[in-house]
Length: 448
Image 1 (cartoon, rainbow, N blue to C red):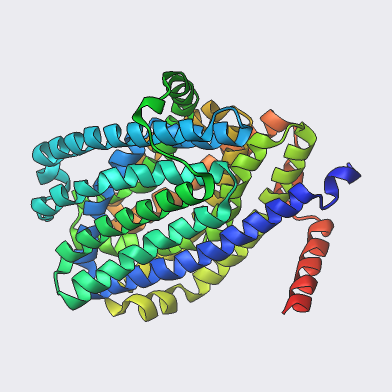
Image 2 (cartoon, helix red, strand yellow):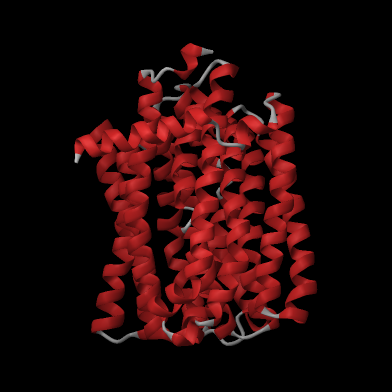
């Protein structure tokens, strides 16, 4: 066991990639919060709610129609089983075709269901936002190429470019040209376009990749869909679990209520950034590791420390929720503070669940995540339908936290069953972890 605990080159690489991802994600968070603040203050709760509903539609279509090819990209590149240029060609062709299908599907949804879920939202802006879909598909498929290569410098920079691009175009269209909600939607489209251009440039520069339509591989397509669909159903169900509440609030309440809830939800999710940073690095790492002992050690180390760190962050967030929300967004968003307090415990548990989910998927068993995700969607939907009409936004926040808690309990049981790791090993911080913290702090002091 001692050999596993040594800081090998691979472990140093994992820590370095996690820290790099975290530092870039912090930058991404700062830009993202700044974007939220600008939109919230200029558009107000009602406008913010409309923006959230409009941009959610293409995001749902993207998540529904990726077919898990993004997940397969990470898995097969990590294992080195497919030529990189083959993945590049396939992802461009499939992403383009699926985006066209998603635009058509989105137009049908708007035409037939807009009065139910987007009653107060300008329909022309819903159609306009669908134009972002080709860039969103390519963004998703290109980002996972870098994640599979474990090139987290470009992977995380691309995420920053996306947020920074949207913010820059918001400044142009909303602040300078005063286009309001329409300008915010145009900025959303342009930000995704800039991100795709950046990643294509990096793929050509770093890996000399060239697109050739004749390079499409049906064999790889079948493999990627066969593996990816299991993870895809899980990911889509998880996404619905986090986002279906927005549609339900829009259905039962008004757009301003959506704006209030989305503000709390976005802040809560951003407080869990450290877990997301490590989780993004963990999945390709686990897929590439060959020994069960090292896999179990690595995930247990990450899981128990993420649990401790996120609960400290959640506690701090609960204490400063009101001051944080009012300072950033203004008095009109004061009700978001109480929602944030309700959501934060669930977000902390969700952070650990993501770590365990990526470990399970990296071991080639994404179907376990899929079954739980489907249950979570149905359970969360039932809770929201019961609690939102009765308790309003507090009911929506409570539904989320209850669902996250139940999902966490089931996921730790599944992880133990798959790995035979004792619960305390991946949930409770050890003395060796505290020594690790001291060593990291000491090294940082020496460096700076």
